[in-house]
Length: 147
Image (cartoon, rainbow, N blue to C red):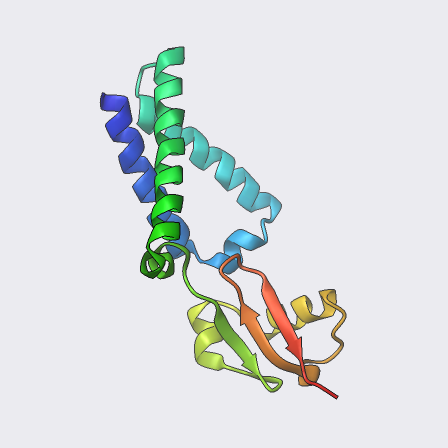
């Protein structure tokens, strides 16, 4: 039972941590970020199971975290108002080719990040963009000006 309670606490902590880290950082993993995630996984495992290295302990920990994920997904689906808290909302970072500085700084983005994403989607200049939206996944969507 101790492992189940620890798994629930660790899951809640990791959900808060992911929301604090920000969506843009999580969408573009660099090699250092991958190493950090591996180390974080090992540290979390030690906190979950303590000295229990049994197969049963591992199944309980992983099963509890999986159940928490399914529960959060269900709550997000069933109660749309909670989706804003759990997943966040899309944020407009560029309007009519002009950056919205408050939104960029809140998401720790600079205009070079937006321009890079635009180039990856075949947009040469930001002046061609009507809207640039930072999605909840961390990706930036672009809507080009018509005509």
